[in-house]
Image 1: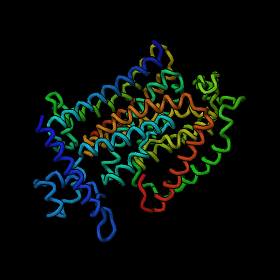
Image 2: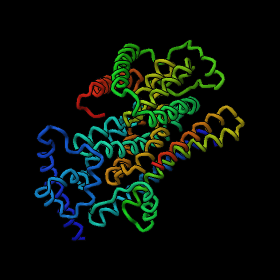
Image 3: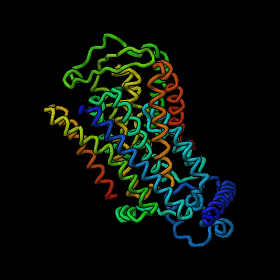
Image 4: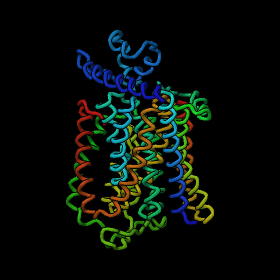
Length: 351
Length: 112
């Protein structure tokens, strides 16, 4: 027992020291970031000397240090951030990777591949945890979700194969601009959440995609039809490609598409998107897992945190009026679009 | 049982099992003095997971990750079975297409 306390203290001390040192060394003289390559953490496993000494003596091993040292304190940080990510992910039909990846890379100094690897696994947890509730409460449109999964998964597979040939920067700028425009349309039309008189298209009729859910903020049962399904399916496909490029779920594109193109009420769109992204994220997770980019100590607290945060998120979404959810989503959407455009312009931002 | 309940239960059980395994992994890591935990890749993923039986921290966490990845895949398969039971052929087709693309992605992922 006392041995445990000692090692806890030693670890905490090591953690703080390493943190101080690594922050002062975070930038190389030429300005490039230290923790930038996938190779870095592989080298690290072969450094046998004590870690604190390493910092002082062997600058070559330096990159590795932050990675190996996941101390108890860092674990608490990871848990807190992941609870927030799970909450936001569950509310808005996103995976939450949009929050976790920048946190891990910018604050914790984790290399991008490892950050994305841990994040994409946590997206599966956010999705499954929130979908369990939304499906039970009939907020998820299961049929629509399964139909659109065809586009999402096909897009993710295409993305994985053609990513290197795609003009990634141009795509990012294009989607960034489109999403900015979407933000404006969404906020302007926030009060028209369940338009009446939508006539379902042929595909929607054949596949009986229409749905119904209980709006708890006003206690009415909302019945809706789905329209322009082929367009939404093709956008879902491109969202799958983009998600493979960015390493995040496609929720940020799918939610506004379902809401604005197919006229699905926002909450149902968010719940359905949550349902769908688990499948695409599971496919990508396996790639990261076998590539060796899933670090156990980063991933375990994320899984626990997002699963808990998502449960809170589902409870909040159910009772919040749709107009408010749409405004909050709009703000998030605008921020992410600007980040996408900046990234497309090759400015140093990480999403 | 209706489809909503089936899916809801299977997702909940999958996430819960994964979270419990992650917690067990972290507890094992703490009990062993917060040492280094290995990051594994490729063909050694299987043997790392096998070490979960002996209470190895990284084995437990990798098992948690695999259970988590399997959860949505199982959900698609389950829906497919449900729709074939209901004789809803269109949705049997849709879910089978998704399932086969998923399996393709998982296999190509495991080959690197």
